[in-house]
Image (cartoon, rainbow, N blue to C red):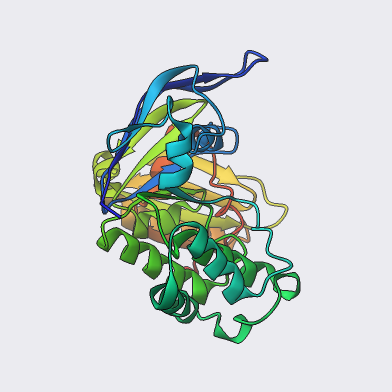
Length: 320
């Protein structure tokens, strides 16, 4: 399929109950680009995706995939876009290989090339032991990988992946990201909807952050971190039952989610911050700490005021 770019221009969606779900969103995904769409639950990401694939009609704005106007021709969207929804694919009555090949045939794949592509994906995702297993007998992670393979076995001009790594173990997550990068290298435009900011930072070319229906930041991961390039992240795991300790004046900003306290500090205050964090560990206020470069997650928290759901439960790295 010919490489084709996607663009949204001023997309606004107001639901019948008056709720503003998207407010003038404009973005583009070039052929061969992996583009991340980040934002808290309820920010408007899923509503935008549903408009792209023709399930909802925008209140105003335009959606283009190459020369196709997806608003006036939603059938073109369903033909040209491949979509992995956040919910599991309904494959209980199919064997893994059957489900992938059936989807490929629906999307125009045929013969030895389709069978070869199916086997390549099964091997690339390391789900060979389950290739002839019925979907009803699969774990959530393997079923998720099978659904991903169904979405990309015969990819459209735009591949939309909604939380593709849900339920997938860490090893096979890496394999899945490798396949996503291969899609981009083959010229496919990929729109990745995710809460996992840390994974997105490692895998996307550009990204946009949506919050309260608006696009509030966009660019490459490096560009979004530019204003914080001279700052560091101090991460402290507060002991259970302990209150947040008084923060010194050199802390630029901070947030606490559960036991996880994250503070932004200037690079020049690194030694002072380590001394302070060690004192918290010694007196039992904290269990561990880590000092590292600013990440995209820090920017996400700063601009949205929310902790990414997929990352909130991850433990802090051990300190010295």
